[in-house]
Figure 1 (spheres, one colour):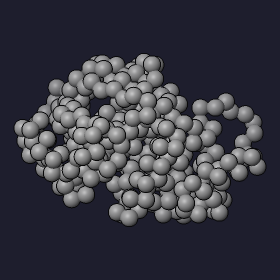
Figure 2: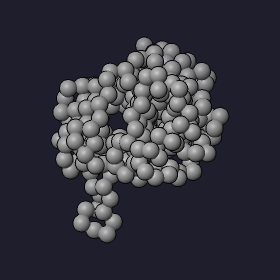
Figure 3: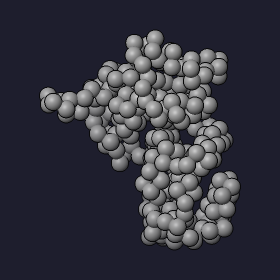
Figure 4: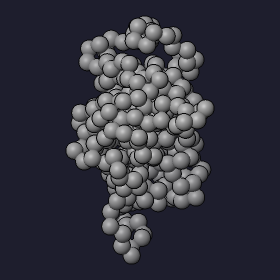
Length: 264
């Protein structure tokens, strides 16, 4: 479903601030894979997501989504393949629009526009059924402005919007980092539920080692723009934070010093 072939990306090349963010990365995901990516600050985690989404061009290599080479395709044209949830709950929704209007925008993304802009009765029923799956009572507040929702409610809505039209790949960029622990756990529970029910292929970046271990069927650890660990199957199921730290030290030759990951 996703193949990243020999991709490199350097920011500020030739300057004192030069940073190799991706160093000849090779990586692939099968349909239905739910991969978590862990690593310290500047390891290259979010850069992989941004490269896949086409936020900026890569220096070399290829990015292939479901057999389609999208390397030279701009971000807005790649959007039809992808669903994305960002760290900031405010980014994925329009605060001044109603819940049902936000859902309508997401549902119609990539479809042919017509002169009929209103939300039909049939659509409203569909949105109501989808909102019920979140178990947050939002199905009874469909005409409420999204700006009135809590951060957790808004992030749950963003997650629903990102998967309303089944994407080829769901990109989750630390989508619970701005939430309190209880709310973050609820959003992660919803994430697992939606991915399983819709059989999505998903890529989740996180700073939290426990979350990286508990969620998904495969775990990747990055350091200095390279993939240094790739664990799945029974080994993934039996992981502990301590074991993961040992593997990191063995693979990288250095200590894992990111406090957010250790304390999460």
